[in-house]
Length: 344
Length: 245
Ligand SMILES: Nc1ncnc2c1ncn2[C@@H]1O[C@H](COP(=O)(O)OP(=O)(O)O)[C@@H](O)[C@H]1O
Ligand SMILES: [Mg+2]
Image (cartoon, rainbow over all chains, first blue to last red; front, side, top):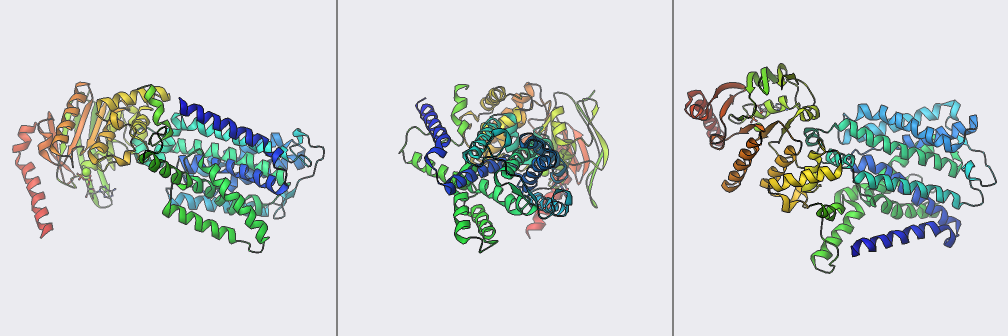
């Protein structure tokens, strides 16, 4: 009881701090970095549903990001359709494409699935580079709209408008993930990750559940794609369909800890400021260097700490509990550990 | 009508015939022993029935329905559950979560699945370990967990692939008692064991596989004295000694 009240207090405090952020941090660079941290948290959590819970590691999620960005932008610049509406159309397109990609490639296991997603990502980049109707390799510039109305999905003076939109998306995906962990589908996804053959022997249609996971994952990735387009006001195949986007989505989740709710958020909070500072510091002098660093990071984590930063935290917690330094945190394996005792 | 009917089942892996023209009927409520030397094709027969391998030829009927070639998940939904010879627990999930994954098949809601899983854990003596990660269990408890998980799907027919192998005598006694209790609850079981001794006091009927052929189908007493069965097992001993030298 004591512990739950304490956790609630922390949660309320964190939410208040997040909501008030633009009012106590005014510096544009820091505001921008914060928006990116939240944006990559959402992307990491989106990737996590398929790559973390269901264990299907994808390096092709830029496809959904790009589709979200291009769909809403095209609908807006060509037909004047509101990006808000375009955002949902984009999500729909991404979900359809996720089915088309997922259906055949879920037959592949492990590394072969990952490789197939890389290939699919490259195919989309090539298509959009050569698709003249959507700007080809040059991409599309979005017209600037002044006046900062929420309906326009653009904020030229009050930049915090972007912050609150992406924060709302974070709230939504946190809620979805939290629910997922506590429903049959969440258990099924984990079972598929742990041992897909055993899962099948227990009556789980693994293809169907992997597809569900991919569809949810694709939808969230696409709406962030629209957000990105509105935030940067310029999209091109090299920015939104980039392999770097796919890799960074995976890395944020892997660094923080896959298959957990907090992992991708922690991963983004650590990685994105680092990436932003290096980018400013190097000022584009070393083009692909960050990718090399990312590759090294992925290798190091998978060798030394596959559970990511969350794993390090849990180990530390266990050690403390074992030494009897804390008495309120039981050394249970999962968050649900204590919950069922009420039922038992 | 028999619960399970296998007609002329053949399974080939390239040139190797792992099961050859198997005919077998299993009646409701039976405990059937399936024995045979290593490599006789017992696990392959399990895999063909439970949907993990498509049979090369032949038919499998369950409750009169043709289930040949159904995928494993559908076979399970129809009421056939199994354990694996090499345990396949969901390693990074707790004992309770493992069993809940099985329970979800009949109880889609989390609270109900949890309640059902806890009952089964109580029954299988794993209740005190419910919060442990499955990977941390001893081999005997992992096997217990696999059985509990399979039971959670509420099967009519249960396949146990060498559930007693690698257990010590007291653990074997527990497992035997468990099989008896399950049988009393009306679950039909097919027990694969490599070692004849374990099966004899449990099974009402024993079938013997040797090099993919079904060579005997009889009571345990008659099986123990059947010359072809003895020869099959002697053959194995002979091969084993040769392999050592
Ligand atoms: N997936 C497979 N591919 C090729 N050969 C296999 C496969 N599974 C089993 N076999 C072969 O089939 C024969 C029967 O094996 P198995 O059914 O495991 O025997 P048992 O369970 O009776 O020890 C063996 O010769 C084995 O090598
Ligand atoms: Mg076997």
